[in-house]
Image 1 (cartoon, rainbow, N blue to C red):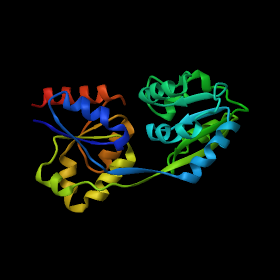
Image 2: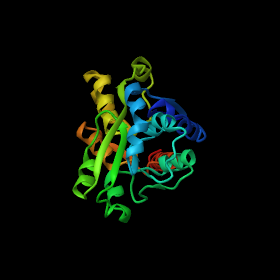
Image 3: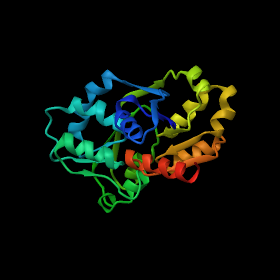
Image 4: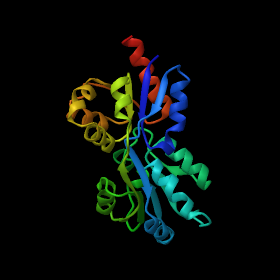
Length: 243
């Protein structure tokens, strides 16, 4: 039986683990990173949202943590945007509004390429995210004449993987969904496990994550779309070709 570890925040991991287990695999959560809400930032979010013309949600965590703080607000006149199809579906269900998102890829570059963002002059954009992260979207919006502000409503903290269990039964594959998690994995595992990590198979939802893994010496990476079904299908195809 294949053993697959999914390194994704626990709140977004249940569906993926279910899909992996449906294939007959042993699927477990790999807690590389925990998400902690920032109460003061959440308290300020409604006021920031009220002043914005558009709200961009960087991640599923941003939606899960931030949306409840906006309960009761009328956001019908505001544009909602994100980068992933799954995030867009969830945000549309919560808001009852259409959500702008790219379909070619799940990143800020693809969002910026949409014709709806060609002219944002005079618009006020609020980027809802965790602490840190890329400034690409904010910088590009500013270059196009918009005003961009951040609502950093959560922070990432170290998780506590069971390294003894990892050593005793190395996984057949690890699903990892951000470049930050790649760095967490190699840092938390420690130098003694670097060789073992470099030999693992990884499944990732973006080429940028694959590039980060390659920088750490990982040679086997399957890159798919960002949805759960695509990642499961990518692993199935790999295992079919490499029994």
